Image (cartoon, rainbow, N blue to C red):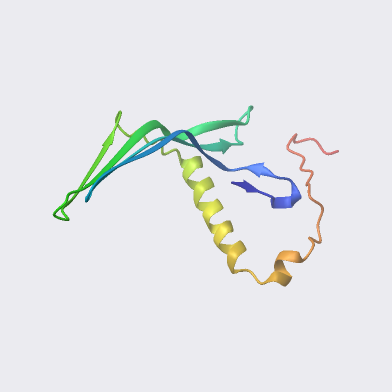
Length: 133
């Protein structure tokens, strides 16, 4: 997910799914399905001296197994290969909430507003030196 604020694409959030496996076993009226997903969620931290990806959800594996017996009984098992680790930094939360708001706004905005060009430059100069230039 990227933002094009000021017409310069900047990454916001990325979801990594390096391992996805799905298998089924059908034996007569019985069905067994197994889904395994390895995932990680990162956000792009633009603060500080170096911009970099930082985790929100550390890499973890999720397994989902569904069994449907001949009598129609359904059994669902969910498991993880390790504990779920969320990193809830203030900047990560504000970045994700802001991205969700902009995404909602983009879907609800009228087409005329989306196609309108900006009346200001895509950059801004600011003097933080304390010395008049």
